[in-house]
Image (cartoon, rainbow, N blue to C red):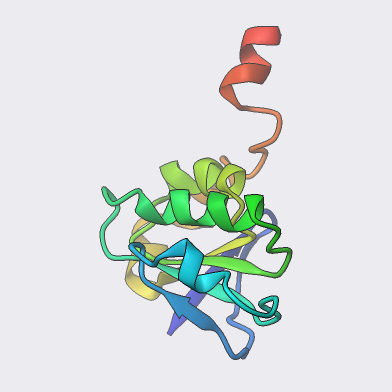
Length: 122
């Protein structure tokens, strides 16, 4: 099973037909042709692999407005970065949810207020 993390905490996975992308997907190939209407899920094979953040940002910059989900090895400390990159939610496995419970993710859910630039303007 999977746990979905949003700004309001843990929730169940809602069935959808996802367009699954590897973190090294070619953005020009993905965005070619008609607009993408289905939700996109980007795989994170390891928590140290940040290519998915770049891909999410590029999708948003190129006009993708649908649901964007990070799936895999994203840890609570990376949640704010995922949201700023353009992800709407994060999908983690039950094991990670047990090791990093909901309160650890919620501590980073106020990602808009607690970013580096806001602290500098403070």
